[in-house]
Amino acid sequence: MYMYMRQTPFHLVEMSPWPLIGSFSIFSMPVGLVLYLRIGSSSLLFFALLLTAAVAFLWWRDIVRESTFQGAHTSYVVSGLKLGVLLFIVSEVCFFFAFFWAYFHSSLAPSVDIGSVWPPIGISTLPTFSVPLLNTSVLLLSGVSVTWSHHAIEEGKFKNGGFGLLITVLLGFYFLLLQFGEYKETMFSIADSVYGSTFFMATGFHGLHVLVGATFLTVCLLRFYKFHFTTSHHVGFLAAAWYWHFVDVVWLFLYISIYWWGSYKYSLY
Image 1 (spheres, rainbow, N blue to C red):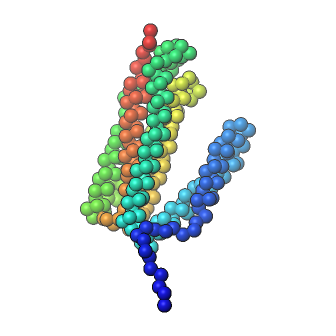
Image 2 (cartoon, one colour):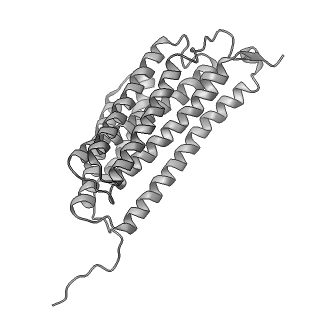
Image 3 (tube, helix red, strand yellow):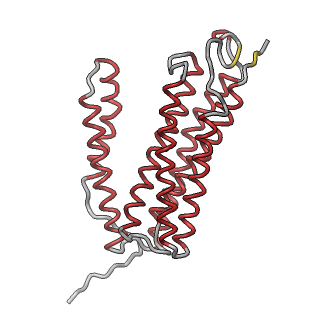
């Protein structure tokens, strides 16, 4: 009798509908956003967001099952996943580099259209050492707690690891709450010159990344209490921790360049 034997350490995934449905739902989001902005119809945008969330949940469920219960994630697969996460973070660095480029391009040589001064005339910047500094402290503390959780898991101290992960999740959502309150207090909008555009685009997308990272860590917290992680196999948590450290570093650059350096008014003339 011929017996099938696996000849490769890599995981050959089964046929799945999620890539096709996911691409359709993600494509529908910008189309739905354009329809919402042009004619005020939010039906397609809401449907696309709901479908994307459902596909993400079901797709990640399948991956968790493959790694935790089927043992499909060998050391070779884990190495590939780590490389994929690193490349993804590099792409995110390039994404934020574009916002920093736009900000410094406009601030280092302010044009005549905004009065040749930065910040532009009429813009009241946020206090550097109030809520932005508190947000910085919150994110730095969350970076410490997620590192503590990581080392605790590797050392088999799962109680400390779960506690550190819980603190990180709470600090992440607290940061979003603080940023929401900050947006309500701003005296300018995204339509107020290039300063408002670059400010809200950079900090807003960073807030979106904090939301995504906090969601990643929340899923890891649920998996942690379901005993999905071991001292040697916790690549899902590792990926979330790397992503969270990236979010921390980006915020440091945002705080220094936009909230601190960019708050001092100066002119070219």
